[in-house]
Amino acid sequence: MTPLFQRLKSDSADDWQAFTRHPFVLGMGDGSLPESSFREYLVQDYLFLIQFARAYALAIYKSRSLAEMRGGLEGLKAILDVEMDLHVRLCSRWGLTASDLENAPEKAPTIAYTRFVLDAGNAGDLLDLYVALAPCMIGYGEIGARLTAEGGPKTADDTPYAEWINEYASLAYQELVTATIANLDTLAAEMMTETRYPRLRKMFSAATRLETDFWQMAWESQ
Image (cartoon, rainbow, N blue to C red; front, top):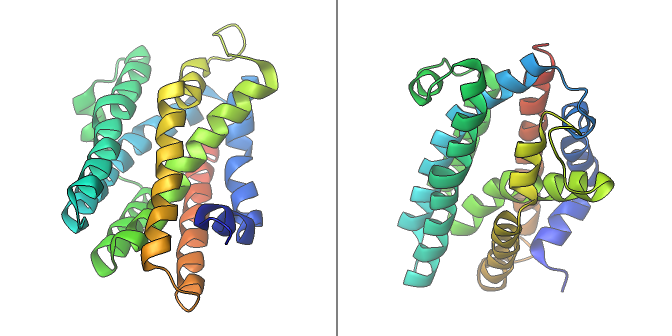
């Protein structure tokens, strides 16, 4: 049987392509992305990560075993201790503090995406929640790895967005991606039926499109 994530990605290929190869992403890779767009993205993504952390806390609550709880904890720690710190470091170049980021107003695409994920987790089970989380967790890893592979490890001379790219291309983040995919496959083996799959695919595609909307929000701010 085809692993769940591979199947979801294949069946949502157009949505996945639009997300992972959006002009915003390509602009980070070659350095052509306007700084104003990147700043807009970072501020909104910080707010996004606050809600995403809540989603991983929900995953711990929904877990059926200590092993599942520890898996949710690893995702939560990656957000609170790594990704949010990255955003604060990057935003400090514009004099923005963590408090500034936390108190910025959420824009409509941020609200739409985060509440979609939280609703998926509240209304469904652990598999529903992790399917809704998958495009972000796995997609960023794919983007970081691909942008690095296309031109080698990035430096500030290559693109002003090298630190962002290198974070998501890092071994630590790639290991988290691998664990996320494996977790999806394990949950699917226990909890998925063919009758259920179309609903999971619809949820995955919707979350992927919301990721694209998030890039577009920042892209249009330039």
